[in-house]
Length: 351
Image (tube, rainbow, N blue to C red; front, side, top):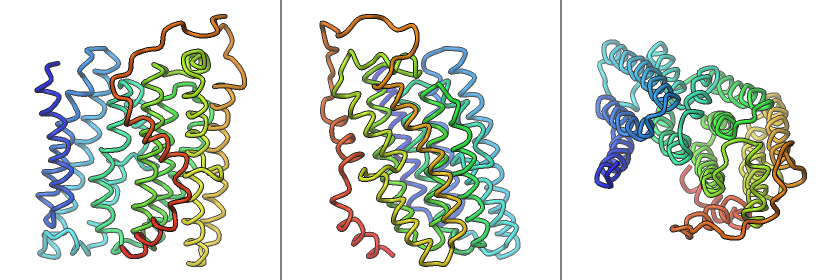
């Protein structure tokens, strides 16, 4: 694909997301969502592989269904409330439909089953875009209407996402499917705290994007998409594999990594709101998630997958053009804990 087409598609992704961010009217927000959807479809289908074509078709059908449902919810609210403003959606039926549509776009449970299948058919760079950038616009809309939603509905949505994604990722051997379930689980943490602290939910999303970016870039550098190939990547670069283990443990929320901090702050806020039962349930779901991250770390460096080669090291390292993004993302995903007081001050200022 020519470079000018890549530039056009990436610029359209940025333009669509920015348009949704700046929108106060549902129609302009809908246009931004459609622009981001149409911009990523050529990137998903660029390899002309049957699995990529299948993933592209599934993604188009799911996003079209979610967009149609969202448009129907906005029309219903406009008809009943005589308002198309995002902040003035008050009709309970329209709110429920809009939340379902945004949950489908984000891949939240119980609307998450399309995400692992779509992710499995994509290359790692497009999977990174789908797991990070494509979450921003729907999450921004969900933040704007979250204060009008019933708190119990958001709590159930967050708990179900964290729990079902944790169970779904247990027996997976494909790294892209594991990252898809990780996306659903982390968004569940953001959604459950959204009603009490939008700034904390936004910080959780930002930290998730940093950790996911570091994980995907490391997998792309190692050219690994399965546990069986990932477990032999230590011979290419032991230092990167050690960093990958720390990234995985950070995604699991193990202290003192970056991922532990946001879970700790969310649990603290939930206990302040006297939500002890949801806090206990989501911690138990996090323990299940930590298990399959630890399992992946075990297969990465402590043991070798059956049937591996006897080659100890590669005599020539692969030339990497971009040597800046990966170390920055890895450092942020692992060692961001000392900067948490500054991040918390900015979060409370936002709230």
